[in-house]
Image 1 (spheres, rainbow over the protein chains, first blue to last red):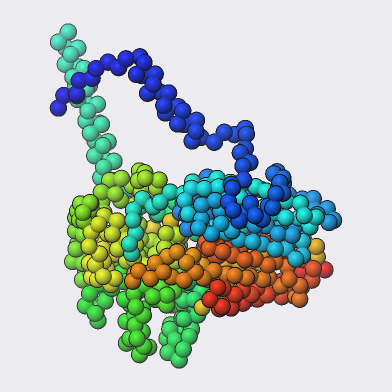
Image 2: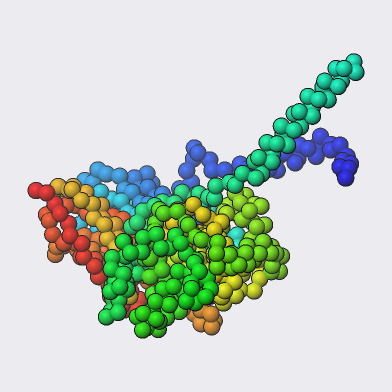
Length: 159
Length: 259
Length: 107
């Protein structure tokens, strides 16, 4: 079978074809420099914040960039010390941007722990941003956000 | 000129022979089977590798409790499962002389329930059967799958192989189309595995629960829009036998974690 | 019936951060799934989870439908003295679960 004949592409067409994927790649690939610290405008989260502006930086929220399955996505929360008297960790709340129930979990620490680390697994209904808000004893709020891509399964499972 | 051309022709033929020979050697050498965990992401691997993080161990623990429960407990005849059940799951599915057919581990456990424990069999995919099967199978964890397909099981093995290579369903796909021809390639956002059975019963994130190998097979049949035989059907058991033979040498990973 | 598997880090001294890990058998029903008959399966998540170290509550959690089925938690407590960690929870259906684990603390 002889190969199909091809018309030579014009330079303009070639340039356009190269630009489109480059633009797409620039949007998809995460920028390393600037971290987007936008807290999603979810009603329950906005109500909890009650006009307060949390600070970013001390609270770390680790989630995979691409989830194996939205049913169980490993999550890690770490709050760096030092924990000064009067500013101990009191609670951490996790909010989903896309789940039908935005408040995913709430952890309260009646006794400040020597190490502020919580691991769990979350359910994510689709690609979204997860927000964690820590509240300290002095009322200070700390925030962290993480974006997770969640795809549907390649094959439908009706078992 | 003619002599040089003849020499180069001979050299070309020699090279061609070497290339053909090498290709034939590669094609006929059986590639080592690779477990699904090799195709899994780091998070799934981390869940399987840690017994506390592995949700399948919740079923294994329940199975351990069932093993010793009641007046006609498994433990009454079989004692400590770590000793008596070691290597058992690696040999299943197996020919059962009494039943005169190939049975899988679930069948064998239910047969014991009915014949020895004088109890009702656990339904397929019931929590209790999954727990007991996972508990028995994990006693073979790390041991290579070693089913016997010679002798009376051979006809069933051949039927299983025929099922594996036959196109079916609205998508007209055979198991081989994905798991042999395209293992390692991407399908949507996932990597196609070889479809090995060595981690079952396994905790599947998609199910949010432990499920049997037969459930996984029925799920695949649904995926290609083919009719699903009922759980426990002989064609599924025979397919399990073929899969185990194909997986010979792979270590039992039960309870596995898969997406 | 809900039960759990626990792991408490060994070899700790007074004042150390002790790693505690728990895996709970619980479906964490979202309330959005439908059964084979088309009926909605009722929401059932772990409304309240408490970890007590002796008589002192050290962690309290409310795990919603956004937490995966068969929840796994890893957290830290501060070692005080040898004793018992008690974990108790109640779900939306009102069913209670509990489990204990010893904690050994060197002086």
